[in-house]
Amino acid sequence: MPNSLLLAIPFLLFCLCLVVASVHSYWRLRHFKGPKLAAWTDLWYVKLSQSGKAHLLLGELVDKYGNMCRIGTNTLLTDDEDFIRKMNAVRSEYSKSEWYNALKMDGNHHNILSETDHAGHIDLRNKLVNGYAGTNNPNFESDVDVVLWDVINLINDKYISQGPDLKPLDFSAVMQYFTLDVVTSLSLGKAFGYVRQDKDIYNYIQTMWENFPVMNFMLAYPPVVRFLNLPAIQKNLVPSVKDRTGLGKIKGVAFDTVKQRFAEKQSGKEGKIDMMDSFIKNGLSESQIADNTLAQLLAGSDTTVAVLRATFVHIVSNPHVYHHLQAECDEVARTIPMDEIIPYQRATSMPYLDACVKESLRYHPAATGLLPRVVPKGGDYYNGKYLPPGTVIGLAQWNMTRKNKVYGEDCEVFRPERWLEASPEKLARMEKSHELLFMTGRHRCLGERIARTELYKMTFEVLRRFELASMNPLRPIDQSVNYGIWMQRGMWMRVERRDGGGK
Image (cartoon, rainbow, N blue to C red; front, side, top):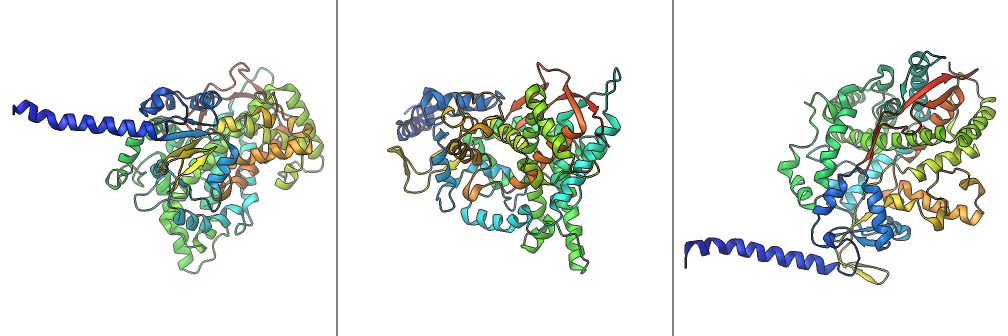
């Protein structure tokens, strides 16, 4: 046999195996409709994920192919709320996909985002929940207020415009500084000082702009995900405390802060009663606390700030909404001195403010990634169609909040009044759908209370004290792209101090 033929045999066998694998992959999910190319390769989704508007394109697929459609060789997409609740239920056997492993911040253990093992996730969640809920943190709301005062003082000191004296404020940056300081204040006992310094400390934000598109590209292709999850590879990819900027630098600062708190505990010194204290009492190690702080930055800061930006963009862009909400804020403000921040419970009792926050969360969801789950052993069924075990199912979150049958024919319009006009039955249906924005069951967002506190308080206090006007009404945000979470910058505002407002 010629040597050339001998050399060709392995290649031919490889090609044959590839064809067999492709046919098998196609066949197992053939009963679910979707783009033809998606049934044979995942590369098409890689391109879609890099568009910066994948949330819209995925929504179009669900509209075209149905509530459970195929978007990959082993991946389905759904916006079926009942099925999503089923996957996330406390006793559900559905698991998080291998995609989450890439969110590890340490090569030796998982954080709350990256943990895919069911038992491990429950154990870690139980150790974190009291700290997030405020059960072991009586100063939770006052800590948020301290950072909010920093924002108020920053605007008063540097960004008040008067007549022709214009002092443009990049509202998107200040809001991100606010959420970063809230996360670090609550989780580490002290804010990093983004707001007070009015700058991107450690270049965290810039690093995210540079790295997130690359990370999103890699995570969009399953073979790359598996390669990145190899221990030897992942060990060299996680943020390092030796880094001078970005997540690694923040990880180093966080680790030093946590280490100091542990030393104080061991010496018998009474420390601050806060989220970190709760984590320590519940058995988290130094590195676990530091790593979960980084997870909070990704899951808490970068998501909440997107809704804050959206809230103010849509309020300022709608004169009717702006004037109605500001009038309600003024009425409530009569009972709250200017040297005080509105209590969270009081803010949530304001009907129109509550409607505006809910509408912002609905109209502009904080996270729009797939958040994929895996069909358990034994498989499952969806409307009579078999779901083979190991099948990955992603969520079309953008579509979930834009359903005519739930929110009305004008669901593509920002209209807070829908929450006030709905019948009791319709409102209950809307509320049930709305809760999925923070997920349900064992995957319900631990930071929901923190996010809502930031949203309600910030919206009230800014409208109470300042007049806002977009400097570019036709394009209120210079750059806005979506890679599962929103990357936004350049939200320029003219700010004036209101009579009796400000300081």
